[in-house]
Image 1 (cartoon, rainbow, N blue to C red):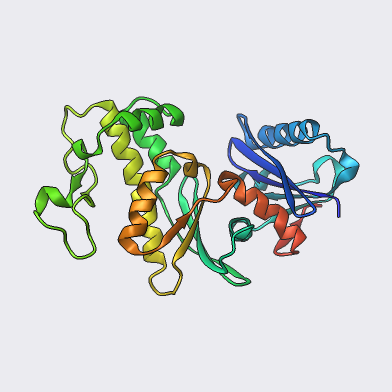
Image 2 (image 1 turned 45 degrees about the vertical axis):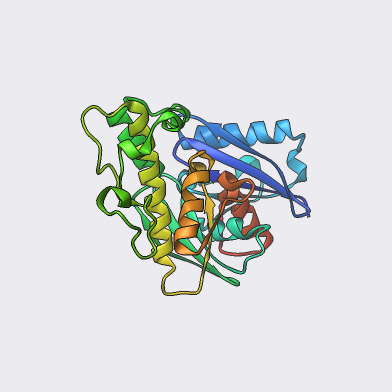
Length: 280
């Protein structure tokens, strides 16, 4: 088998990976002003940087919202589209030993995909995600630079923003430690520092996603959640999700290449021959 290219095309960003002999080759992330420019820029840079010739490519698999703009084969290569939720499931399960899990795709919003053995299905979503984080930051912090926001948050004090159980009760409640959040932004006032606000925004988004994921699992025996998408790169994930693991008795896993898992899954839909829509 030749190289199978998986491409996750967003509105202005594209993530691309190649899979050859079941090995992921050098994932890449490219930004541009529109999805078509982003896609072609990513593809050209990827094959050039990795020394891949067009003749070595067996198939190009596209997924993501931006793939709707592509209606012809890429450079004359065999090209097809993959269902995004199928790609999320296959990509999250890649190199993960768990058979049953819920994929938590943290993009502009958040989607949940249940994986039970070979069965993969979308079970819902949440209108809270990276778009929420950036929108609130534009309003409250006058920036949408995610790296600056995360850096500011690391210098902030969350207890100046969030109301915790210990603020309203002098003893832990059943299954709720004293430092559990009772109300996001429940203690915020007009004098809150930008750093505290940044911390409050990030924690609110991550906590909302984690809690919604847990609630989505309640009618099943699933205890494992695989987190994928750009938000997995926030340093605050290492604080928020371990705390929720202890609270709920579950596991939140952030795998290697977590932000590229949908692109990996797109390539795997061809390798596994699952839900493919040829581009003619």
